[in-house]
Length: 118
Image (cartoon, rainbow, N blue to C red; front, side, top):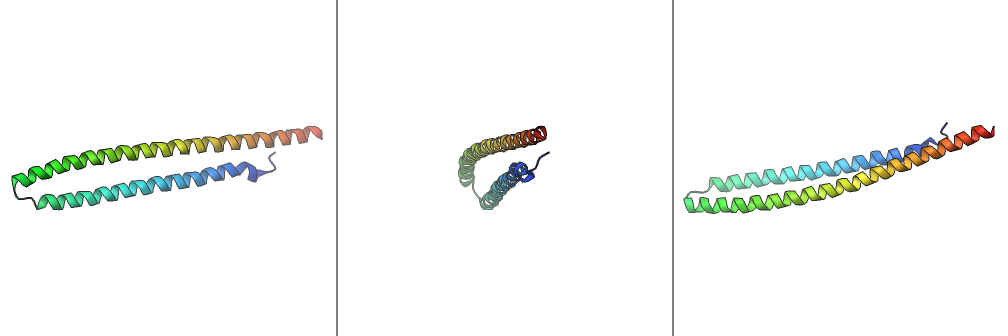
């Protein structure tokens, strides 16, 4: 039925490559975020362990609140970036499926035309 199987499977191969690249990128981003957070927590725990008076503790808490706000803003920015990446990924997947469908239809048409001429 389909003579050019490579032409038909090419979009599928592209999809596999796209998925692999996309998931590798997401995993690296999550890994880096987890490592950054772990380092931050370790640093803040060491700092907190050295606090000896109430004034310094109040200052530390104030700093922690500012840090929490900064981390929240960073998380929102990361989420926005991930959403944009997912939107681009989705568009590429849709395009690959459309290409694959078009190629399959063309191959079926060729096969049908070829059989009709015999």
